[in-house]
Length: 275
Length: 263
Image 1 (tube, rainbow over the protein chains, first blue to last red):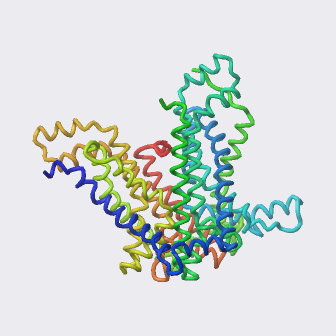
Image 2: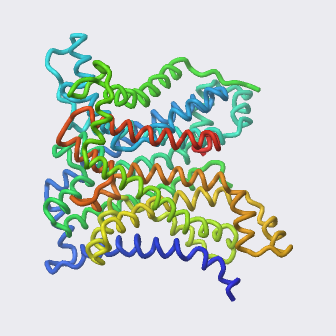
Image 3: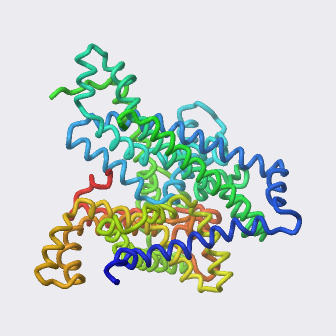
């Protein structure tokens, strides 16, 4: 009897921890948004009825889509070069990409405060070479948040895509070349399509990560560039509007889960190697 | 062996990307030793007084201890429940339903900030659990997927017939697990430990709602400090966190090699 359920017994503690401390509390949070006396969808109509909150949602989408697009391009081109590098250099390049990834979000966002600040490195440099006499206000703009987020996510993209590109069989590439394709043609018509599932995985990681981020927009965007994460914190801990914060949490969960599920379907369908 | 020639422009682009990736970290390093009261790079003068200053600020002293305790305990707990789960998912694959492995993906799927807020509402306030315990639950959930996935991946290449041979020769199941199975997935366990530790010690989003005047973690304290003071102490604390990472990675490099992280 014990042996028949051995697998269940071993998996039970971890499963229970996830169900009790993750699923239940998150479901409860989403549940409270439907329990208002003003009407079942009242918190949502008040969220989407507020021009300010709509603009926050819109800005968050803009920032995360821009971050995803830039990270995809930068990450893919870099991963291509890394995957084609000779052994020793390749490991060095991979380590150089892993290291920033293991350094915390706070440290890496803080670095951009030193670079982009009013008396920061970039402004001193620009004044030094005579481009401008007045420092530019680069902090607390949408651009500064996007730059720091791209910085945050490019290593993740490189590592994801190096793995994908290395799994493309060398025979396929050689076949394409021996059939007369130029290197650029092989890249566009063979390598890129085969990398699509990996690109989708990377894009989902970056999009969901940037859409739900807190530290980077807080440090580099501040009050002026409020996003869903910072708005949620402000609603919960400054205004003590827990229903409002839960509504934002629910919208975040719905968007991330939808994106993950939809994109993993697309990835399966687009995989040219799948039989 | 045919080598593809890479466009020189693409190589230049890659060099720029790597400058972009490493530059900011070098700047933080430089700013942390600058003998000025404001943050600047390249450093003017050379001093370690900002590192001394970290330990003079009691909030940093306290949060460093809290963050280390939290990372060690959460990683330990996640391994304690994650190793049996990963073992079960591989060894008893046929017995268990497929949705069970999906359960361990959930902590990645749910945004960390939502998890933190929900734990505040349901566990810290709802069940009036102590805040450190709630933080520990949050961090354990945060790192559990790494433990289950990385160890599952090592177990996938383990030949369970070795275990059966030991048991059929009279070894007790628990002893077999510790003497036969675990040593074979040692590298997976170490990798899981390191990933989990680094994730926990750097976490902001899960801890955000679970810290307050009484208790805080180092990254949250850094965030709070940046908003009030903009002096090199912040850079030196950041460097301290970076060194913790390097130290942990050096241990991995010596035991396993680093490229496994790219897998």
